[in-house]
Amino acid sequence: MAKLKTVYFCSNCGYESPKWMGKCPSCGEWGTFVEELVQKNSASKQADTRSFDSVQSQPLPLKDIKADEEPRIDMLDGELNRVLGGGLVPASLVLIGGEPGIGKSTLVLQTVLKLSHIRSLYVSGEESARQLKLRADRIGLENDQCLIVCETNLDRIFTHIQNTSPQLVIIDSIQTVYSDAMESSPGSISQVRECAATILKFAKQSGIPVILIGHITKEGSIAGPKVLEHIVDTVLQFEGDQHYMYRILRSIKNRFGSTSELGIYEMNRSGLREVTNPSELLLTQNHEGLSGVAISAAIEGVRPFLIETQALVSTAAYGTPQRSATGFDIRRMNMLLAVLEKRAGFKLGQKDVFLNIAGGLRVNDPGMDLSVICAVLSSSLDISIDGDTCLTGEVGLSGEIRPVNRIEQRIMEAEKLGFSRILVPANNLKGFNAKVHIKIEAVRKVEDAFRALFS
Image (cartoon, rainbow, N blue to C red; front, side, top):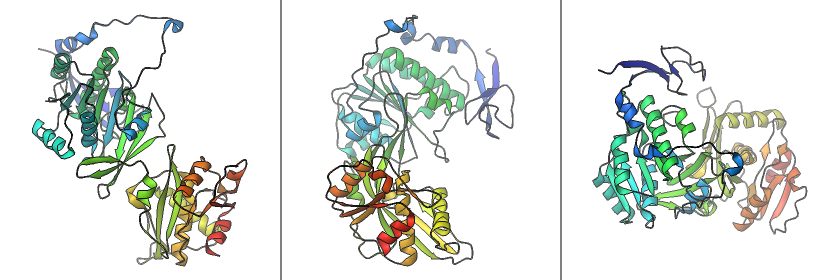
């Protein structure tokens, strides 16, 4: 009988220890060690001698290694291609994570069904074949080259791959797959790490790209050990509020492209629709004459778009002021409120402040600082901001308006959508010689912006 071995893994970073410890010596987190039962037997040796293991690596001089650009696989989805860096790279391992019900499986299934020229294998460990058929009928796409199999055993998955010879493999999800070489249950740290490492080895040696769908924890990180994100080539985060129709696909890690790209989708009854011009969809409401609304020219990745910043300032009803932000960093909002009180003289210590980024989006662009403080001040004074004015600029702790990147793209986007005036940091206009018809006002301090908007 094979000998059983008990080890402890850190659920945060995957550090392995023969005994339980309160603090992880690798990542420094407390109380993250969990016990796993590992069995080392002949099954592990058999797992290491699969057919795709026949390729033997040979050391080569660096000058003899060819570094030609490999042709990428066109996913027939402009947003997904943009986030991947131009398409799917052969032999790559892509991990897509997101909250339950956000649309990960729908995004991958509708993308695979569009690839009628590629033979693909969709391995489902969570849904039955009938459920996938119902989802495909709802999406309204058919593809005879897409094969469906419901399996969670890793060895049998490789058997199906050998029998079908696909050009693309999708595994939904990695937390449901298990290997007989490990004694622990599916979804455990050791199983996720072992299965992901084996799948990576298969992808690199066979040249077949693999897309993994993964769960996330309540903190928003990929479920399983942190080493899972280090194993894969690309980590994509699919996020959005379930109460809104917009979804954002972000690139957290990408060995073959930029991590500053993002794709925007709209969820409807027939699946996910690409949003090629998000600015027009995010500015559909008419807020003429309403206070607390400012339009910001933001940049996410390399895409400029205009977005509404909504603020509500009211007297604190319960003695202790409330601070709430949706779609914006609450700590940065508190910093901006402190700048308003210290540098501009507006007392907000006994006021409730609520901030909302319209559309359910979450934007991290520092260029939204100016629109945030102007929306807060607009609500506090109950004075509306002109509907044909937009703003961009980063606010420093001393109240200065700091320059932002890609100012030309922000101004061009505002002009394209019919805005007549834009407030920008003064230092951004050095060397700016683009011919535009929109009125550009340079501001150096927050007082200059307030004077331009509310005087």
